[in-house]
Image (tube, rainbow, N blue to C red; front, top):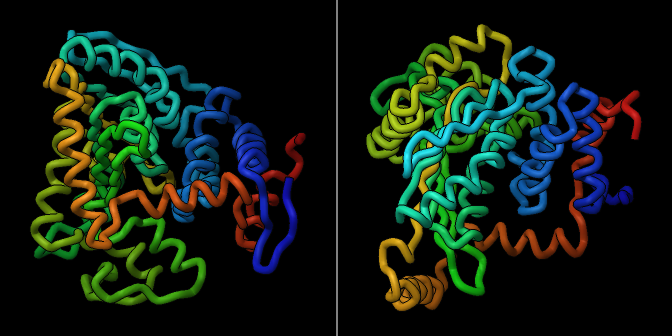
Length: 345
């Protein structure tokens, strides 16, 4: 259900999911593919992450129409080693590939204590926290990395080499929401710059450079030039690490190769993702519960002084949106409805 409110359209999460599937199916995705992709978008909207929410329908459909995405891709799983599983996504979006590999990864982690999932040949448009949160919900510690398109300059340079190259981590907590963080190694997620451009807002001068290598507050100029890493040389080194772990190590593309493969079509990044899963019981045996409780003492030491744990804001937004729905900005809702035009409800 939906209702017009001041500044936008209020929708239930079910209605957002239905609309997203409708648009994605109309763009050509198979039902299973569309459902998995829509679920990720709804999760972003539900958790107050506007840059990774329903706005991503515009991004995904652009990639589909540009021919970047294989719309009827069928992921293929290769159980290649006791602690390793590979999934070839067949050129589709990453969500179905993760869904296929998740249970195998979890089983291998529980059998060996630690395991890795290498996802290759997929298109990425979303954050990584849904993957690590899901695994943490399964009782596993999880770490995920992926390159993107070469949009980000290394520290000391002004020309793109890296992608936004996110790193995500999940830690299970008994009876509580998992401890999860997910951050780009760029100064900000690219979607945030795009939202500034759409709103006609300036960006901070330390977010990026224009095409001539000059610092700028023009969002469009940064998108056409180069973004910066966060934390100078530290973020730059982490971005390089992500390139290596989820590029050459798993036999997939670097961010520069992804952008070259796009051939100017303006699609989402093409490449791979590496996910590590660790079973606390595999490391700690009968002592697992005691040592996981020690982790809780650390979390309490953080929150007791008024500091916020990563994802607490997301979880708070989730509780509100599950009860009250979400408000989609009017202009964005109009764009999405235009995409949905002519598609059977």
